[in-house]
Amino acid sequence: MSASEQVIEFLHSLQAHICQELEQSDGEAQFITDVWQSQLGTGITRVLKDGAVFEQAGVNFSHVKGDSLPASATAHRPELAGVAWEAMGVSLVIHPKNPYIPTSHANVRCFFAYPEGQEAVWWFGGGLDLTPFYPFKADIVHWHEVANIICNAFGDDVYAKHKKWCDDYFYLKHRKETRGVGGLFFDDLNEWDFHTCFKYMQAVGMGFTDAYIPIVERRKDTPYGERERQFQLYRRGRYVEFNLVWDRGTHFGLQSGGRTESILMSMPPLVRFEYQYTPEAGSAEAQLTDFLQPRDWLNEPFEV
Picture 1 (cartoon, rainbow, N blue to C red):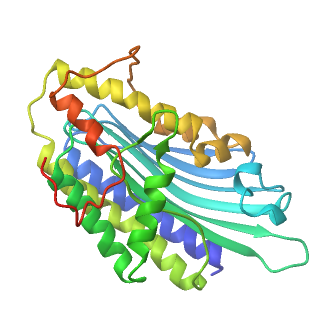
Picture 2 (cartoon, rainbow, N blue to C red; picture 1 turned 135 degrees about the vertical axis):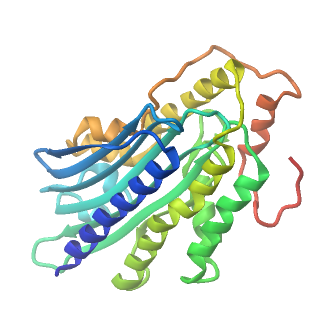
């Protein structure tokens, strides 16, 4: 089995695992499966809608190829501009109904580039991040504890490095705030041998449900009203802003001619914008601002 086939086999199993865990947590809705083929390759998009817990959850597998890497993939590798490529990955975004459950995103991916007359070049990328509307310290600490456990087997400095990478990447420069409370992010990963990099990608992918499902179970029965719902819809607007303005994955998908429906699967089903919205001082909504800057969630003494 080739290296790319090994990665694809794992990604299929990862998609199935995550969908099963989310269905079990929702307890009502099931994923619909959309098998697709485009000019670049094939994929399986699985979407859960209008569940008891999840308003929309999308888990997408794709395997695509092309004759020329787009600009968004060669910013750090200009020598690979124009070469043939192959990419495979699983990406997911979960938009819960209850505003007390955070939105969450994760993805893992592998790229191969094939310079003519040379050995293939490979690298991995991915990560997971959490975007609460009404944040709880216990949820955030749990999220980062799992992220730290994922990284520990690969080096003492990996969590700190990839946590900072996540804080830096998921940052809305025009708002001067992070998208949420971070997690892990890595790209262009080939500093270890292929087997070790692949194992790390697997650990991140499989660790997502360990990090997220306990938070969902803890918060899914929390009562809420129209005030919380409207604030959730407003804050979802930040998610849209980041994905369309800053996200390299969205840019890569659109620039490479990928399947638009699957690329934009990450968009929330409902969202609202409000001109110059300012939460009431001292309110639960105003508290979120304090969480939208990078922090040492595992060691910093703070009260919430």
